[in-house]
Length: 389
Image (cartoon, rainbow, N blue to C red; front, side):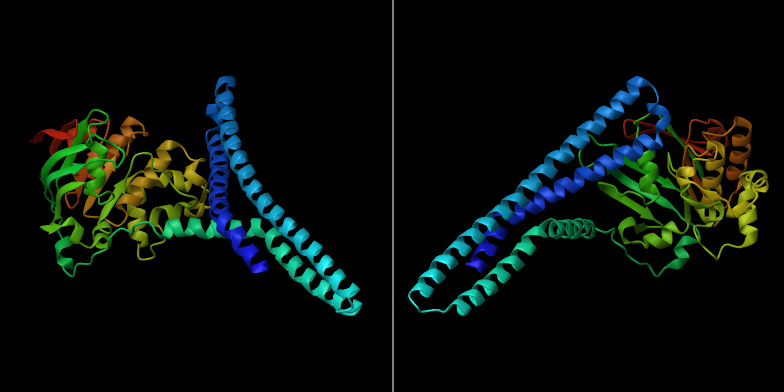
């Protein structure tokens, strides 16, 4: 009967208990995430109207959390009640049968008490299992969440033995298309182009024209939905992505420094970067003057998202990081947008004057367009014009 009870409890309430525990955990972290967003954007929520919105959304998330918390608690309560009922039945049955046997002199008092103690010890052990079920569900929820992460598809890695192919990088796209999984419309429609080593390409177009998506696909950060992408005549899916990415520098829109020292943000822990290369990159983006004002210099700690730094300094750190390894190709999305025009133009002059690397950039600063040798104009996911100077 004891084993049947345990089977019965887990058979009919295990899945629902785990599901409610998962939902409870999900909304708990949604609440924590929203509170973190409020803290990160605290200036945006200082006015009464904005604060009301923040609190209403927080109340909504907390309400969902409490709802699933209550559902989970009810399942635990139901399991505990089932055990109590079983304990009552077993105890009553034991007393009835034991009393009958004692009265009929088929069992003495000592045997009856011993049997009572043994059975109650077993039942109490099971009761401890039921009482600890919430902890058990928490462990299962953690394992399930880890399992969901580890079950995600990994980026397919392939390796090429032809290292010489990266001395010069030629990018070529044929009938390239991209569509987000939850969207009916294609962001990119039939993109075909060829980019030779050393070209300086400016991509322009209205918001939503596909500029950022094209740059990210060319940089290997996203995979096209259909079509072909070649690097030095090798299909993109067959090349060594790690090797390719080691030869490029990227700045993606809204990218920011991470928590760590300035040196860590510049080198990403790469000890092979020489002091000469470090000094060259810092001076190239006009960051040296700022670093000299810091007591700890390159060892100065940066807060998450570089919150104690000006937007211009953050942009310079990202630019220095992108060129410090002297890559073959640079992919930029609005890299100088937050800088003063004069300083931005000087940095643009430096980057576009280097003939060794390819530059592919989209920006609101038209000085990039003046300095680039090729201009792509995009509209609604297609390249409307491709002009060279």
